[in-house]
Structure formats: C-alpha cells, structure tokens
Image (cartoon, rainbow, N blue to C red):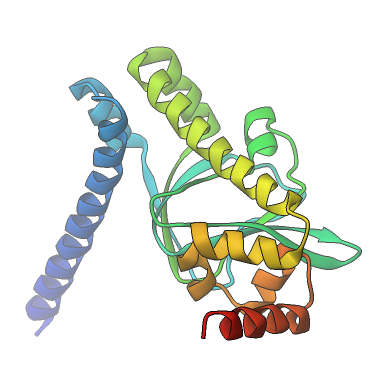
Length: 215
C-alpha cells in the first residue's frame, strides 16, 4: 500500500512537471516568434523562468511595494488599480498573452502607486528585474525582444489614454466594446464602471441605451 501511494505521488509529480514544462514552452514560443532565440538564451530562460499561480482576488502587487518581476500571463485576467479618495480606480485589464508590470516601479525600482490584482484564477511566468538586466547584457538578441514587448505595452497604454480622453462615458464604453469586447464579458460591472469613471448605475443606463439603439 505504501509503495502504491509512493508511485502515485511520483506519477502525479511527473505530470505536474510536464505540464509546467509545456506551459513554459508556450512562453518561449511567444518570445521566439518576436525574434529567434539562440539555444544558449533558450536554455538560460528555462533556468530562470518561474511560475506563479494566483487565486481570484489575490494581489500580485500591492501599492507601496516595489515591482520586482515582469510577468507573462499564461492564463487568467488581472487588473491594475490605484486609490483615489479611498476609492479603487481600475486603470487597465490584462489577459492571456499580455505582459504585465507596474512600469515606473519596475524600471526605477521604487514603490508602486498602483496595485495589480487577479480577477480570475491566474497563472503567470516571471523573471526578476535583476535577471532581465543580466539577459539584456549577455544575450544581445533579447534586447530586440524586450523593445518589442515594451512597445506593445505602451501601445496598449496609448489606447487606454485615448479612450479616457474621449468626451463622454458612452464613447469610452463604445471604444472598449469595439477594441476589447472580451474585457466587457469577463470583467465585473463595478470594475468596468470604475475604469470608465462612472457609477454602476450610469454604466447600466449606457448599456440600456446601446441595447435599444441596436434593436
């Protein structure tokens, strides 16, 4: 009986490790699609990439702490938010395939003004700021990969800023619905309202007006 359980545990552990390796390969394939990675760089990334599982509502980063890791989202959904007059204000949402950091905190290694929270059970792969600097220094091809990742991050940031500059909450909602319909489906009404800068009641009215206009 003891041997049976020992074999079961060994098999289960092997399955978990195989699953993690498969998940890691997804990250490596994503990076390799941006720019071909050398065998040496691929081997190094395999040795430093770490996985973290976050339960729904768990904090990946709390305001006031330094963002020490850059994360690639394998599965799940997270939001960035900050406090304004003791009220949480959602600033953006990141999903599978996105890279998430608190930009200023990560690159300057200073306390973050924003928090990052899982809205669903989430799996991320991450490396530390120090590990990233080592990779940049010793594997020149990754400088191009890093540049593309940062560019994509800032493109999303510009889209977010553009949407917030639109005159009305209705226009901002339409922009979000047109460009990021999946976010509307996966994020709570309260968090969407917070992101748009309106109350839940106002958001409900916007949804009703839109629904009537397309009938």
